Image 1 (cartoon, helix red, strand yellow):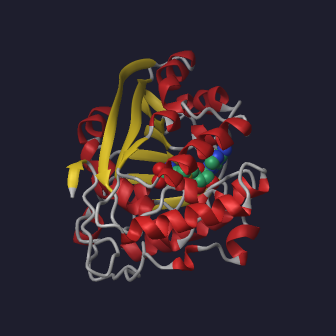
Image 2 (image 1 turned 45 degrees about the vertical axis):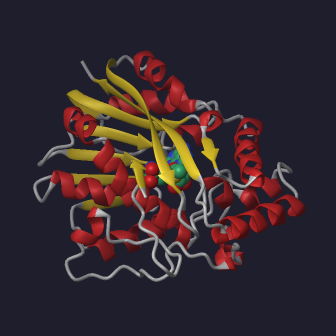
Length: 317
Ligand SMILES: C[S@@+](CC[C@H](N)C(=O)[O-])C[C@H]1O[C@@H](n2cnc3c(N)ncnc32)[C@H](O)[C@@H]1O
């Protein structure tokens, strides 16, 4: 049920419907591997290849996780429509999507900028880049260029883009936030923008949720703090833009409210192996959370999640 934001339809099988997303409407005969992209199956446990690819970055990219990224991207496009337009994500624009992950948002942006525009996706993680390549190919868009690079050294020519976007990356780069935003600020042409999106993990709220899942959410915020990341990153976006010499054109926050369908898993669950590795969780904790998800999947009353998200746009003088 849509409350404000995500509108994942529950199918009888318990998987999320893909039909609501803009991507589906644009599929042009290309069929994404749809069955079970977010499933209620227990097989969302990490495979060997999942765990071997993990380094400083905490979120493992299972198929379910990629599905969540796609759903979030499709909904962000709708919820942020006015910000995106005002920031310059319009037909013909060149947009850098730095820390693009599986490129779910890059693909959405590609449709916004159209055939005369271009999206450059930058990603440092090889596995995410491979997933991104596959998603871009399956989506049938031909104006997304993916490149390996880091948030502080994208390799993009200064002054060459209309919009430099970064979504949900700063919260994973504790201590480097300002140098990242300083670099992003060099990328747009004069009058172009830097577009930042991030969260406040400490303000996430749930009702009708299993208490163990509240525990998981709290533990995830603490785990980030232990890593030197700022769990309240979203609150600092305006400061970062201003310190980078940009004029803060807008800075807003919203709660996305979603009645979580069976099978949906939060980022905290995708980080469980990293939490284990850091000593922020035990195997008993993970099993407790796994059991809680199973109970929650079977419960008649769905948990409602209130997820805060902040968007800040800085304009280059
Ligand atoms: C939470 S994901 C967000 C992906 C995408 N921006 C989105 O919102 O759908 C963060 C991504 O940023 C990448 N990342 C994190 N720190 C990075 C850095 N310093 N340089 C490049 N990529 C980075 C991670 O590998 C991961 O793929």
